[in-house]
Image (tube, rainbow, N blue to C red; front, side, top):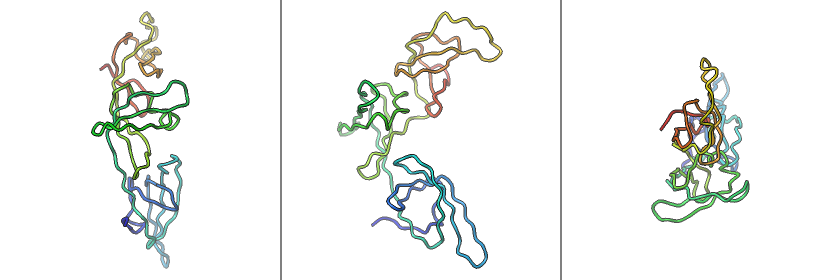
Length: 192
C-alpha cells in the first residue's frame, strides 16, 4: 500500500499521484481564513508531459505519495535522423533500454557515446534522463582563424561539438579543444 498523506504535508520536490497523473510539487502556498478549512494552492509539474499546472486542495484531502527510482546507465548511441531511438545500458546488469529520441532531444545534444547519465523510473515506467550540471565535450568544428574584433564585449565565435550541438565560444578556443558546457542552458562554461 502506498503512503497517504494530508495535502498540507506536501512540499517542493515531493512527488505524488493525483487523478492518474504523476506530479512533482514546484511550489505550495497555505491559506487559512476564519470559518473555512485550510487551502493549499499547489503548483505542480506533470512528470510525464512536462506541463505545469495549479490546483487547490483542502486540508484533510489524502494524497498518495509516489517514489521514483534512479539508475545510472551508459549512453550507447542514437539512431540517425530526427526519429528513432536512443539506447542506454544498465552498468550493473548490462540490460539495454531504448527511449524515443523526441523525448530526450535536448539531453542528446550533450551526450557523447559511453557517457553516464541517471535514468528516472516510476515503477517500470521510464520518465527521463538526468544529466550532470556540466559535461566535457570536444569541439570538432570552429574557425581557428577568426579575428578578435570587439574584445570589450567578450568576442565569441560559433563552434560545433562532437554531438553536433552548436554554441558560442570565446575566440581563443581552437578545433579539437575539450570544453565544459552547462547542460541546463547549453552555454560554454570553461576549458576542460
